[in-house]
Image (cartoon, rainbow, N blue to C red; front, side, top):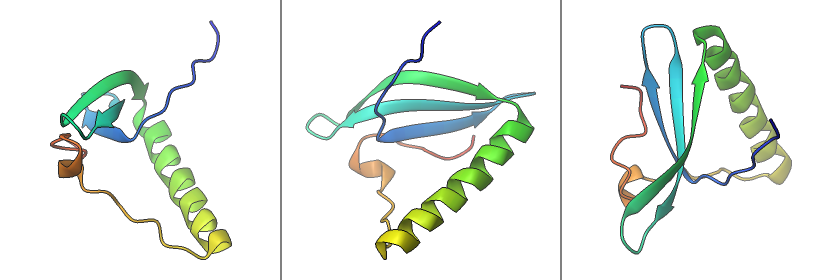
Length: 85
């Protein structure tokens, strides 16, 4: 199986009994629709590791570019909830 590259500007995070699930998609502002195109299942320990590494990477990026990345509002795209459910 080869690697698949996708672009995502929206996500949703869910937890199930033994996994975390992250759904990735692309929001289309003109019709407030989100086309969901990938789902990733992670063990709790892998999800925690991803959260730590991603947080560190964003902090380094902001420091290098001397910027503060704004967080978009989920209501801008029609994605009602990006948070853990």
